Amino acid sequence: MGLATNALNRLLPAPRTVTGPSENVVVVGAGLAGLSAAMRLAGAGRTVTVIEREAIPGGRAGRIEMQGPTGTYHADTGPTVLTMPDLIADCFDCIGETMEDWLTLDPVSPLYRAFYPDGSVLNVHSDVKEMSQEISQVIGDKEAAGFEKYVDFVSKLYQYEMKDFIDRNIDSPLDLLTPDLAKLVAIGGFRKLAPKVREYMTDPRTERIYSFQAMYAGLSPYDALAIYAVIAYMDSVAGVFFPRGGMHSVPKAMAAAAEKHGVNFKYNTTVESVVHSNGRATGVLTADGEFISADVVVLNPDLPVAYKELLGTEPWSVKRLNYSPSCYLMLAGSTQKYSKIAHHNIHFGKSWKNVFTELIDKKQLMSDPSILVTNPSYSDPSLAPEGKELYYILFPTPNLDASIDWKAIEPRYRDECLRVLEERGYVGLSDSIEVLDVTTPLDWSDRGMERGAPFAAAHSFGQTGPFRPGNMWGENVVFTGSGTQPGVGVPMVLISGRLAAERVTGKDHNYRSRATR
Image 1 (spheres, rainbow, N blue to C red):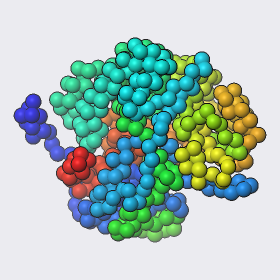
Image 2 (cartoon, rainbow, N blue to C red; image 1 turned 180 degrees about the vertical axis):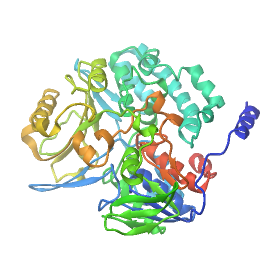
Image 3 (cartoon, helix red, strand yellow; image 1 turned 90 degrees about the vertical axis):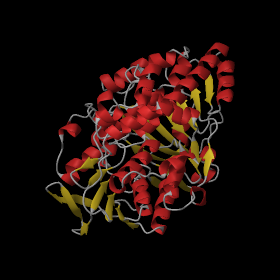
Image 4 (cartoon, rainbow, N blue to C red; image 1 turned 180 degrees about the horizontal axis):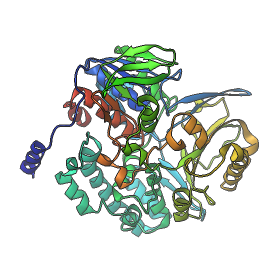
């Protein structure tokens, strides 16, 4: 098999890289992907300038300060679930730094607490034996045995999928023709996710907790391919962590370390356009009229928005895209503490399959919603005033392809969400809220996300791998972030930053040794 793999690798062309000089790189956007790319490029000896329209780094992983009557709530505005911390550590390694000197990550236990409509509660653990015992106690021994077999399946899935389909630049469908493709087919990676989960676990409670992640990929678990169980592996098997100081501590630390190693950050600066001719960029033009020259431009804004607004074009590969559902996000500073919840809580409604039919097919608001409630102050009380709590409450919604007038319905929908939360156990929440910040799909759009979809283009088969918009345009423009390869999620965008850097520097041959040491 090793000889066959080496022979196949020799037949496949090396991934494309930018042409011409590449000493001076401008990165537009200080999101996690842009920071990952910038750190790697700086470590490879490039001169890097990062231009960010906001006053702080982070992009979608931003931060707002909400002033309450007795103090400040420090609220993250983006992702709340952090997995695969080795990918963050590798960014620091690239510039000779140690992540632990800049950032403290604490394991979250349980990873999630799942609440079901029958009143049962399931704590999700990354330790297989501990999780097996939990399932045995709540559901039964047979289901626990099925879970252990499922872990074997997703572990193989991760092993076969990561190296050849996620962790490298892909220029052509031919790049998928590796021995691992045959292995993925053999274990059922290209069957539908929900039926594949049911091969191992038959209780609807375990089916939900190990397939809901498909929503992050923009798909129903009944439509998503089983290869997307790799998302479940990343959090439910590999573990979930929380940075001290909140999720925004991650981009804050990355930017500080990058700046120490020579990366120049220009905050409060908006890029109006990429200046280019005949497929070659010469730099960027800011809203203040400043031209900043560059040998290479790396674009971290949402890919379709970057094409239309910064490059002035929209290729067919972008026009054809279908997008993930959006979400309605409430950041609430509250006087009320709930003793039965954990850090991350998922509240499942009675409906399951119909949730996805409403969200994705009918593009309607959920009639019986499933909800994510994160309580960051559970793990880090400093994020809220003394004796107060911070809640991050996410209701999935259709994206802006739906005919929903968010300006008109938002107040009513807010009341409905609070009613549902109180019904699900958050008694007195409405009256306890001191300060509230709301983000609708329309707000996500205003922040630069196509169709108001913070989870980017859906990961259907035709929008995955080589069929997802590529991360190069012309001779020297590179994309990074969730809209390009490999896709959505904190681990994926960190990898995307490395893949973008490799389009400039060539393959990072030290990555494997760093990742496995």
